[in-house]
Length: 410
Image (tube, rainbow, N blue to C red):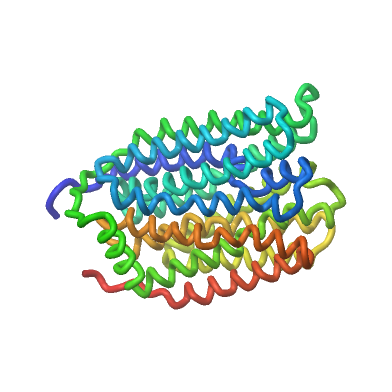
């Protein structure tokens, strides 16, 4: 093979960086994952289920940005885009922090939370795509599988700690931090943590990759879409990702439904929900890593959607505090957000990986209607209608994943 190759030392170094970066993300997961905490904050400020779901919808809409960047950014700037995107994500959290400590009117804070969801969506979706691109240029397929196994099994333990810490803060663990300063502290910690991820991201080691000649942007955009959707396997994976997001979007309503099953405010339970969610995610991270190594990435994608099916069914059917286990199943299913893009890497040439992952990320924007739909279903027909929709979407994702076949090498 001509040219530089990925060395075992690079494989280990980049795997460790991915683990450390993701561990910081998971430490502040209650804020990074725009769903339960934002819903609890909006609920505390008087919003209904539809409005409480809007931050998550805006987050998903932000997934449009990576495609444009992947078409115009040369490969030599892959790492720089990742660093800047993480810094922008940290800045969006600082925005909400300021509105909370200034005690602005509720409608302004809610608007800031929704706007942060959009800004964080643009930045975080861009970071995710270029993070995978950096991994593709700095790790082997086996190295990524190892990194994923340990990252998504050990990393979520930090998310459990962060979630319990979140609950301690929100349950007035610090008497000097009444509402809204308790939520402000969470956003301040998240701002510093994601700034650290930006710094770590600058340390990735990657093999050089030459840029292929590109036609004018509009022509290249059209050709990219035709090439992506001309692949049956990539088209199916795109649809799987849309359905997976539609099922995942029921998480906010699950958190709001807790008041019906546990008779406590979402603010009083959100940390426990997140702790169970990430505790089970840690166990599932190891399990899905083993499945990926033994049966392939596609099997792990199927397992992730199956966990959503179990979580929504459990949350719908089981009353009382046992209901909280639904968040464990949902946390395990969230790993599809890592394994579906990784499946996309396996279906793409290295030269096309950033572009194809950017197009795949558009599935998030396509599914951005889902959180608002879940909220509207809950407001009009009750929470079970939202859960039934999510279960249907999870079943569809499983069925389509079974149809995916890796194309022959060219």
